[in-house]
Amino acid sequence: MRIVIALGGNALLHRGERPDAVVQEANIDRVTGAIAALAHDHEIVITHGNGPQIGLLAVESAADPALSAPYPLDLLGAQTQGLIGTLLARSLHDALPGHRTAALITHTLVRSDDPAFGHPTKFVGQVYPYDIASALARARGWHIAADTTGWRRVVPSPEPERILETDTVHDLLAGGTLVICAGGGGVPVVADADTGALTGVEAVVDKDLTAALLAEQVKADFLLILTDVPCVYTDYGTPGQRPVLGATPAELRRGRFPAGSMGPKAEAAARFVERTGGLAAIGALDAAYEIVHGTSGTLVRPGLPVM
Image (tube, rainbow, N blue to C red; front, side, top):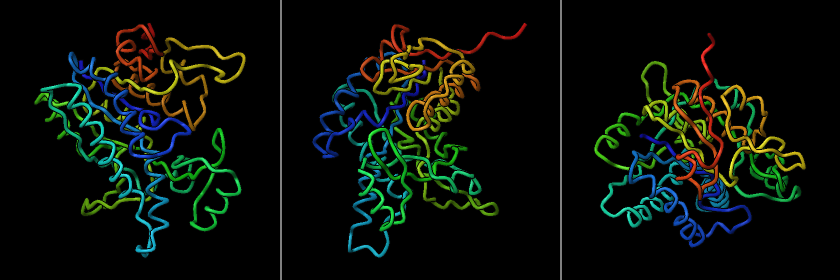
């Protein structure tokens, strides 16, 4: 079975942890341990989030006096693909002796007229108290929005149209290689209508929606979205929260999950199942093997055909 695994941002950094390299290196073994059991029996493609990492790089770039202007988000996103890709590749090399692994920098095509460019919503970087966040917004031209525990920078998040390196991913999988790609949603680019030339854009594409598109394009059988909760819950965080153990895409969408957390994951799972007839699941990182084998997580399955 061909499985695309989308790792949440918590895979390398848990909320509240310092973004030090040693912290991320320690957390990565937990990630690869959860994936290694699946890689013995299945073709695996791994995608990952990059919110904390790209936020950190953006702050460093904006504060660097050697630069006349901060690095744009597309280049910072490429840096995070290399940073996280090498951590995953090195750890998987040790966890899966003799198994081929490749980390691939990938580009995600978006539309230049996507309305998301006028309405930034994607959280990047760390959480700040409001006074610090508002001061940074004034100094650096940021947009900010309230997150669950404070205020964070928000950037445009256009819809992914196509992953440009899909053929390369196909070739690597055909050669028995575990592929790490589309990190942070991929490097966002637009194509010139006449020449096809690519230009990077100031945005971060949602990694779960990119994972769903990638899974569709590489003809995956299963989309596995791993996060820090054991399954999807309705009314999460309230006394009335209830686990959702199985749902069709339509049933999942009726949950109206928050845009900044479970919403994109639910939409990504629904899209993949609707477009391919395959299966998707959402669940805890440590339970990757159990989720694929139907004993944990939220399974999203096609609805029954109308007779």
